[in-house]
Length: 252
Image (cartoon, rainbow, N blue to C red; front, side, top):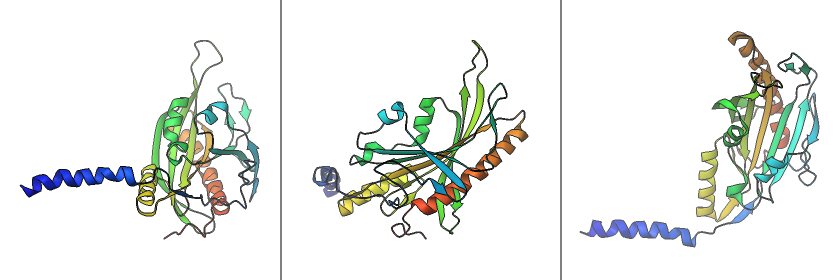
């Protein structure tokens, strides 16, 4: 009989923690380097190795999906040997790697989302998201999330067939003392911090994305993807080395 009483009592005590835990604890700032990122002017590192960047502005739709106190930093990176990109008519375009940095405001839970959800809403299809290992030029071994998708560009001709362009993206999250590729892991870290320490980590979301052409056959498409993947991983490693304050992020 005692067990019958203990179970609901224990459950009631556990649920009661909701009312004594702070809704928002003291915020421990993200460990992105303020020496290389101008967070007030929203400018990313503009010179990284062979890469030259241009700071860009987020679209109105991008801004509207985030809380007002969220910081959104964007940039476009180019180097001397970028893979070519053409449209459905064969016209060549300059290629660039797009950087997006989203730094959460005080409402930690509603400032950053998984990019898979946003990309689907934008019309991306054939999405595949898998973890990937990355070693930066200075030897930092981290896990990142690798995301591939296809975006069908509408034809200029009425009733024409959409022109598919492939996209490859890499992303991760940087907190005060943690770097993780996994949104669920980030949520669990937040729960532990709030429960045990009464603090919140300010998180930053870092994503690089680059388009590539689908080929005439699978082999050509895979070749284009491999070229793009090599370039984006190169920049990802170099940027990570200069953007993350490694004194704050202990790695195994």
